[in-house]
Length: 600
Image 1 (cartoon, rainbow, N blue to C red):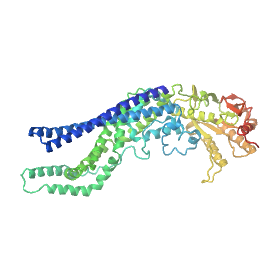
Image 2: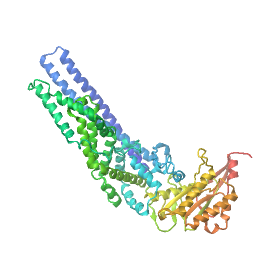
Image 3: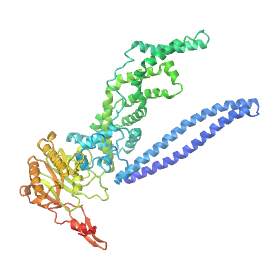
Image 4: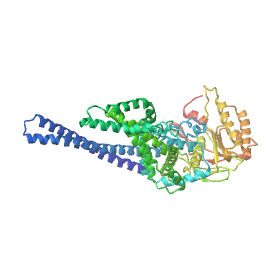
């Protein structure tokens, strides 16, 4: 896939070079034609030439100015082509960086509000730089990003996750369409998700349409003004009777100006967003979905493009406010009243449908993000959901690690009443294994492919204690912060949500206290979780935990191993990151002192 993105970037670079050459030529033509038009007028006016030549030059000047205007529009099309090629080139460069896990060279998507302080999200690196969201998200709209964040943070039921899988598989080969969708919504990229998807108030009450007299006046007064003004210009009326309808229109604009601003203010401010959404819905309507999930959501956007395009037209009409003819339009034709009435009619016809359109858009964008992952990682597999309370993963790898250096392991957490005890020395891969498991289970329950060759799981609720932090501002010590995480796990095990199996992932559990108390608390904690049929894995340096009599029958011990070789520069430590049965038999803390030349 890396070659695909590099080839596409090269292709768009070639288009950029062609468009830049055409743009330069168009600029030269525009300048030449404009100068020629000016020259024709100047020569005709001041040069001592025959009258017929002067007449021809006077006629040629406006023609050349018309050609100049046509060249401006042609140049604009070239500029649009150039902008498109530049954008798509960057998209493919970003995609290549994503494949290499070169995190600093593709943009970090903003984390939607409400997902930024989630403890499990921090433990598993779901959001932020070099996170799962950073890897997976290609949604361009705020709603799409929020929907994807919700899928990753709040696991759905197996039926819904399984229903998404065919949609993700269907969209995966559609690379051109996905990138064109991203291009269509580019003006929405930096939009704050706290703002409305569109400037639409579902509860809006029409005020022009409910005033028949005002509606009639907005139609009759402009007509009367134009007719009376033309009659005076034609000599049919001796006095400026047109002043009466003009004064009436001026008064109506003053009286109802605030109401009009309330109706049109959002439309005017959001014109670029409306145009972007119109383009996005147009791309969505190009789909001819086959999967049931995708068909359902695609049906929800029927008519959305035409409706949003109509609202765009009202926004464009409203944009006349910035022109020099606007005072005549406003006071001579009651322009704002007509635009506001059109917006009211639009609200009456479509406002109740907007929520469904944008929910469907968000869902399809989230699925498109997962399909991009499926396209980029074709060897990853979709999971199988099982009622058995066990997790069985073959060749489980960490999704956020560069494939060139990723090491995969087989892993089983089963049956209920047992837990995985992971031991090993510093830096051997224990914490990485827990995050690999948590991230893949997160992908699985979102409906995405997983970094495995096979994965079976039940409906799960994942609880973690991997990256615990103290808080000076809240007066919470490291030990107390970890106890709060453990309490949350116990409460969920006592009252599981939706019949889900609780899966716990604890890294160096209760490292903030002494070994005697740690062993006593771990014994009680794991004993409680085991009685509640929770499953999970813990890592530890404390091998004595494996000797607790009540936990021995439940512990499935596995470990990582390191190796040392002597070199002229001193001892060198190596890891193969392969999971092995049994407890760890080696340690490396003292060797690490030697490696950094710390003499004690």
